[in-house]
Image (cartoon, rainbow, N blue to C red):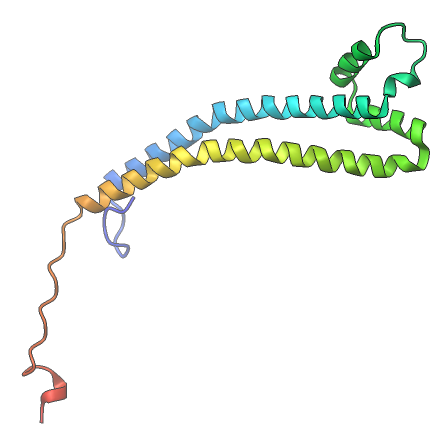
Length: 160
C-alpha cells in the first residue's frame, strides 16, 4: 500500500499493513487449498471410474462374482492409475499407449479446472482487499498543490 513517495522508505505503519495482508493471504490459502485438494482427489477418482467403464475392465477378472458396478466402484477407489493402465495394456496391447495419453490429457484438463477455480477463489477477494487498501492509502496522502505557472519574464525563451 502506498504511504509515501517511492524514493523514501515505507513507514512502519505501511510495513505493518503489508505484513497483515500477507498473513491474511496465507491464512486464507489453507482452507482454499484443502477444498481444492479434496476436489482434485474426487476428479481423479471420477476419471478412473470413467476409464474403467469405458473399457469394461471388469471383464479381465471373470473370477469376480459381483456386479460390474461394484467392481468399478471399488476399483476406482483402490487401484492406482498405473494399475489400471497395466490392465488396459493387457486388454488392448499396442493401443494402450494412445489410451493412456488420452486419459492423462483428460485428467490434466479436469485437474486444471479445479486448480484454476481454486486460485481464482483465493486471489479475487485478496485483490479486492488490496485495492481497497490502496485507495484508502492514496486518499490519506496529502494533496500536493499544483506548481505555479512560470511567468513569461522568468522564462528563458523570452529573455534577450
